[in-house]
Image 1 (spheres, rainbow, N blue to C red):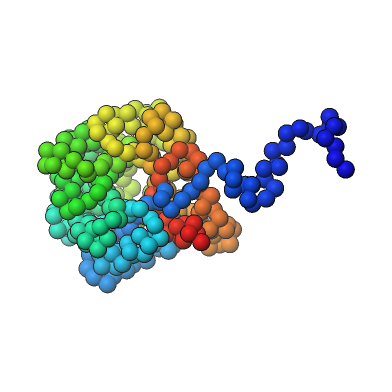
Image 2: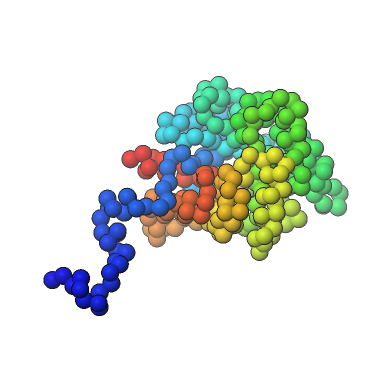
Length: 335
């Protein structure tokens, strides 16, 4: 029997808006769509090659021809962009990472092949030296083991220009060297690449969640027990991230990235609230591997937790998410 006049019962019942699927959909505050997804891809040399990555179940390294085929599937799902990460053979690695700006390096050839086949697909490339160095660091190292900032920036500028000449849409410096965004922007403008966008990894932390990625690109064994703490951010810092973002935007970044994702949702929220600029997040390899391992053990519902984790990034303010779940999530969202 109704109790509307009984003061023991609340006038406002928030559960009313949770009673049916239709009303939950109508009042939902945060929505995830295929438009929010960026698919990372690991690219091999050669043809007809695919290699499973043990620490990232379901993710493969692909040769350029197979990567082009996959991009077609991703485009059919509506995914707007892919991010390329080359797997450089050891014989092409050097202390200064010079292969990074070789016009015929793997990434540059992959850019050309993908844009030739699928010109509407956005192509993002990593600007960092760790896939190309014999020591596994993101910059040039001296004999004392110090990562040299300005010498590294010189190589990064060459790398970004080489990628722009190959036809890339977005360069994404992930190295965390000081001043590299301004140097890259100046170089791009000087060569007429006015519309090549810069997605700056502005708040990239020295995280323990990167291990599987380093396995995937072959830099983990080179790095060994080495640390990137002298250039990537301390996980205990938050305000410093805002300083980094402010500098990169002032130097000409069009978009900024927070990396990793779920352990740094507070950073993502602060960056978006403070600057209101296009802000992306990278759900990194360790985050993906944890969810996959738990799902394979039967402890979690993989599709449900994958989508929930992606919604959490949107809720915190992300405009887009770089995720290894991109293809699976797009398939679910299109169903």
